[in-house]
Length: 123
Image (spheres, rainbow, N blue to C red):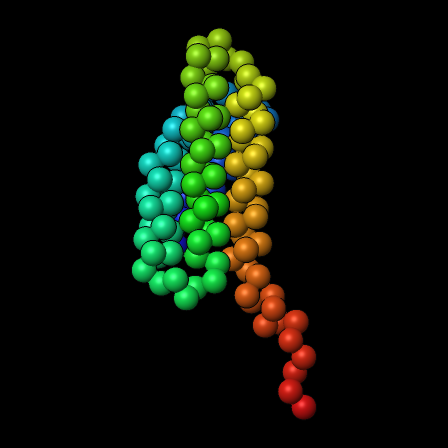
């Protein structure tokens, strides 16, 4: 579980560092998140291929790939700008999209539990 939470934590650290003006730290946090996100994407895809009966496994794997794409785009946009201590708009937009993808992943992961909680109790 920690393996899946670490990329999101690093993305939040990058967003906070960007808001404080520490764009170099944000770049380092995003670079560190790339291998963890790639491993999580491969693991989710393996779960999807192994157990097709799980209804949301394919969606989770797709969301991991989208998160990895946004992460790489944000890192690529930031790499030349890190030397100038600026934040390019594409880097900020990709990080915002990455955080939205992680929020969607949380909602998708909690959806089965919410459905159980909203079910009426038996008399």
